Length: 337
Ligand SMILES: Nc1ncnc2c1ncn2[C@@H]1O[C@H](COP(=O)(O)OP(=O)(O)OP(=O)(O)O)[C@@H](O)[C@H]1O
Image (tube, rainbow, N blue to C red; front, top):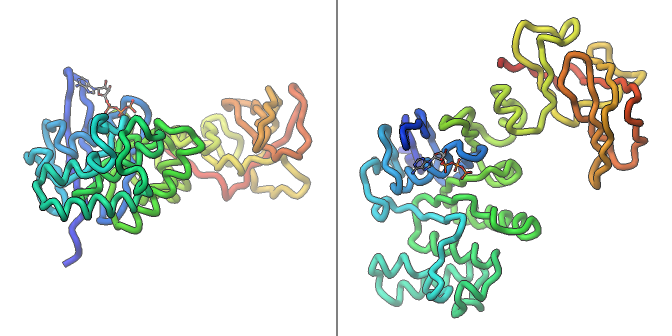
């Protein structure tokens, strides 16, 4: 028989302070994969993570870990590891003792505990810092201690709440890449809470977009960014031009919904632009030079302003000038409201 899913959440419901916070969440995570819960502030990501950990009781619904119904099982018996945004390390314990904390609590033989701590110190590259206190470490090192501590008891599922958000961009990206390598080498199943789209895209096998306590779409990242299922998801991902279908010209006009196209698909119209393309007569509102590209804000009739991205060397149009743009037909996809 195939391995059971690392995590199944079925119809999770929860209200707090009289407000619905989780509204029928259903998820299924195969073993060894990372699921990212991606959403804006207050959509319920952390609450869902806490419910999976058993730190927040649900009003209704079930949670299964490796096929075992843990809906009413206390946290210590669920076999999950948790890495909090703040890392929550013990300031008076050494790095090694922080990592070994969960093993002591399980009363494993001392030699076995020491061997496991040494293994994890190696794994996260902190062997020479074993005797230090958390205050003597950098933010990235503290994050790795928190990760090692959560991994030490070999959890069936690792839960991570914004684990990289306290770090500077320069540290965040290399650290999340080394985390992904480690996770894949260990085959560790994970649920990752994040509001960072790049992080979700890079780290996750499946991305669940959460809005108002619901999963709007759960798909592998490439699929999500190619085919968002609704306008809300497309707008949240921020990777598309959105054009109103009601005010669209000729063949693009519809009674409802919108057309979306990847940002790079919008280009200046050329002599060889195919007749099937959607051509837009626009006026340049503003030009914003940038390191990677120049953003040109344009206004097309009946549409919200659009942003054309020009490569750094391209000639820049002047604000107020007219600019003919085109979107190839194959880049456009209609979505319901
Ligand atoms: N104990 C509580 N009592 C009442 N409301 C709560 C409680 N805990 C959380 N909430 C509310 O539930 C909603 C979801 O909170 P949650 O922390 O899960 O959001 P989030 O998606 O993780 O947001 P963020 O990214 O800002 O952390 C918020 O509106 C929050 O105010």
